[in-house]
Image (cartoon, rainbow, N blue to C red):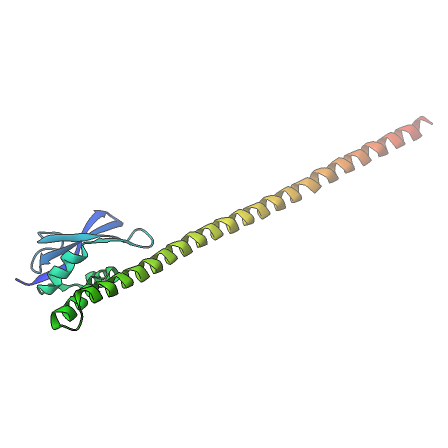
Length: 174
C-alpha cells in the first residue's frame, strides 16, 4: 500500500484550510486517511503551520512519499532535516545528542527568521497606515485652504460693494 503525505482541503470557498495527512495514494483527496499529522492555514501572513514532526518523521522512515507542497511544508517545519539526521544516527555518523543539538539550533534560527518576517510585516503595515493618514491630512488641509479664501474674498467683496453703495448714496444726498 503506497502511502503519501499530502494536503486534505477543508474550509470555505475562497478560504482554504488544509490538514496534513498520511493517506493511501489511492484514496480521494478529501477522503479516508491513515493519520492526521498537522494543519496548514495559507490565509495568514506568514502562513500558519502546525505539524507533528515526530509523526511525520515516522511516516517518512516507513516510506511515505510527500507531495510537492507537503514536502515544502515538511522542509519548512524541519521534518525532512530531522529525518536526515535520524539517517545519520543509524549509520553511526552522528550521536543522538549531536543530532538533537543541530536540530534545535536550526529550529532557533528558523524561529528568528519567521519572527523577523512578522516584525517586518507589522512595521510595513504601520508605515503604510501613517503614510495614508498623512496623505489624508494633506488632502483635508488642501480642501480647507481652497474653501477658506473664497469665503474671505466674498466677504471682502461684499464689504467693498456695501461701502461703494454707501459712498454713492452719500454723494447723492449732497
